[in-house]
Amino acid sequence: MLHLYPDQTIPYLSSLRKPNFSIGAYRGILNQKKVERFMMTFAQILFTASAIFCLLILALLALSKKKFFTVVLLVMVGAFLAAAFFYAYIEYSSYTKRKERYALQEKRVYGLSDKNSSVSKELNAFKHFQEYRNALHGYEAFLLNFGLNNIDNVSYQNTIRGEIMAGLESQEYGEAYWNTVLNVTFDNDKNTKEFHRQNYELMYVVPSEYEYHDLEENYGDLGDAEDYAFFERMSQLLYIGQKIKSYDRSAESINSLWNHNKPYIYTFFSKRRYDELCKQLVNDLIEVYDTIIATPNYVKFYAENDISDDGFLDFPSQKYTRSFHYSWPFSFWDRRLSESNAVEVYTILKEIQNHYKD
Image (tube, rainbow, N blue to C red; front, side, top):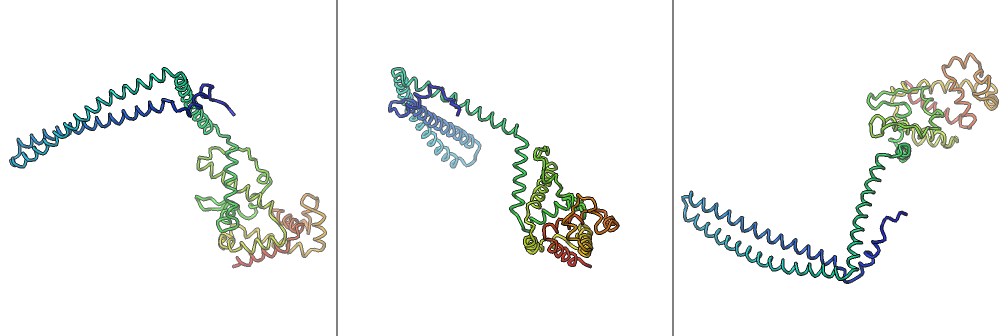
């Protein structure tokens, strides 16, 4: 820890326990002086106001036709003026006497300071203490200014990212949670209310670049609305990617997730929105599954082969697999068979398909 106080402050700090310390007495004299000056000033103001008011009444007497009323008012103001003058005189006399007494007290205090060398040291120590206290205040302001203008941008971004992801996680699995997740997944534009990602484009939501997100990337000024909106969307995508990768994919867990949350899914997807965003994908997945399970030895084939092996897309035939623009439906069912949840996922997809049938 930095020791910023000089050695001279030690006598001062220790002397606070001494009964003959004179700084308090001196401060008391100063406070009494302030009170006396205030009272004297008040008396002067009161006398001046009375005199001005009296002059106004004299002017009114000269111009007014109701002389009797004006004379009565003048007599009252005159009496008030006399009283104010008397009060000012008494206050001035007492002020003069007290001023003489305070002068004697000041001499006594300074005399004590001259005679007692320890008090002088204490005063010097107090002066040093004030100087170093002011220096510390300046140093504090410097550090605060430096901190605000030189924030570690990466650390700041990570903090905000953590808050965004924690906020989304705290809503799990309510209506607001699913609305956010689905809007982000289908890339909803808040301004136009349009979705820019649909059907097979969804597969680009959680590629490896989101799973292993570059946390060092600079997203610009997060105080800017546009930069922050983009950063927020990327943080939410990172959360979705991590959630998908870490979720328990057992058949029981998937069934439970669907049964507890499908009301939110059906609420989010109107018939028109479903047809536009994911109807083709759901239909293709169901069709591929129906074809695969009708093909002999499909269990053995997918147990021995995956998307990285030659011939993976030759099953059940090259003609059939090439009739699709994407190979993803075949690798999707390969993973579901590997996870032993294919039947449950297929049942959910069929339920969705039937729900939105014309």
